[in-house]
Amino acid sequence: MKLPTQCVLWDKPELVLEPVGQRFELLERYEEESHFWRYLLKCRECSQLYFYEFYEEIDWEKGNDSQQSTYIPVNSQEEVETLKMKSSFELQQCFPRLQKDLPRDAEHPTARWLKEA
Image 1 (cartoon, helix red, strand yellow):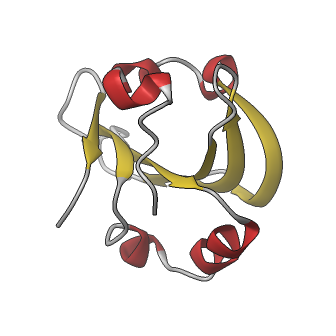
Image 2 (cartoon, helix red, strand yellow):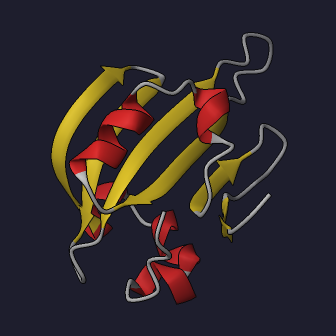
């Protein structure tokens, strides 16, 4: 996958800490359950497309759920179709990807690009 260096998120990944609707336009919904979402998003600033997955792991004991959001830049419908077939674990093998994480013991989420294995 091509590096989205023209996208403001490339140099400022912390911008994904804003609500999704503020930074992105929702183009398609593939999955939408209470703790698992998959969408095709478009950056409102540069029109870069991102395959997006949100996953929340329920903490039944303390109610402090961990959350993970994955943004994978895509350039074609073929790339989107390939990603739709992958499991959450398999998406973690895709590079580059923008990762927003909120572990159960963290006070604030973090965001960073993962560019290679």
